[in-house]
Structure formats: structure tokens, C-alpha cells
Image (tube, rainbow, N blue to C red):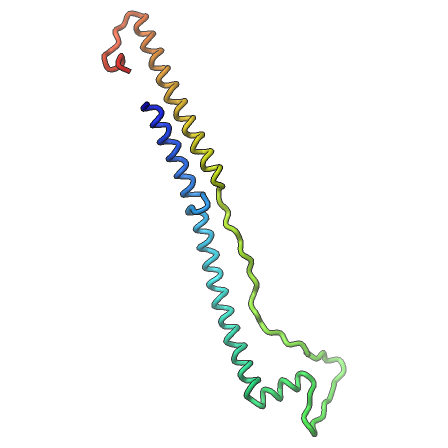
Length: 160
């Protein structure tokens, strides 16, 4: 019974150790998720700054006549009485680019599957149980050899 319980304890210990360290909810996967959270927090701050900048631009375009006029000129509109001079060789920047942030894809954390943790636990159970059985057989063979040679077996060793 002692052998069996010791083997069960060893198998359970290895299962728990591997699950806590490398399992789906283990320390390794949690560390990966913490790193992703820090990266996302930085991205959120970056997007908030971009949002504030765009809100200021929107407010200015909505209310400030000078900004509206400058924006209209970039689009090619003119006021009454204004004239446009186009110079050959210069490229007009008609495109407006607004920074919107960098898209980020969620990355699933890497972890050891549950079946591997259980398999390792069972494997350790069988290895420890086999080792303890072999040690017990080895001890009994040693005791048997001692009895055959005529040596007395001590009480503690004979009780096993």
C-alpha cells in the first residue's frame, strides 16, 4: 500500500507542477498575457492621443473660418476674387492622411496541453511504482540470499 500511495503522490505532484508552470492557466501563459496587456495599454494611450488630436482638428474645422478656408484651399477651392497659380514640376499633396494607430492582432499564448500534463503525471506514477516494486523485490532477494547462506535476518528486515 505504501508503494502505491507514494507513486500516486509522485504522479500527482508532477501533474500539478507541470500544470501550474506550463499549463493553460499556468505561470508561463500568465506571463505572456501580462506582456500582451502591457503592449495593449501602450497602444490604448497612443490611440487616445490620436483621438484627442483628431477631435481638436474636427473642432477647428467645424468652427474656425481660417482653418476651413485653408482646408478648402488644399482641396482646390478658392474664394471669389482669388486666383490659383499652378507650378509645373511640383507635386500637389491632395491626399490627407490621418494617423489612426497601428492594428494589433491577438496572439494566443503558448502552453502545454492538458493531456500532456496528465500523461506526465501517469508516467511518473508508473515509473515510481515500478522503481519501488523493483526495490522491494531486490530487498526480498537479498533477504532470501542471506537466509540461504545461513545468516539470520534481523527483525526489522524480516517484517517487510
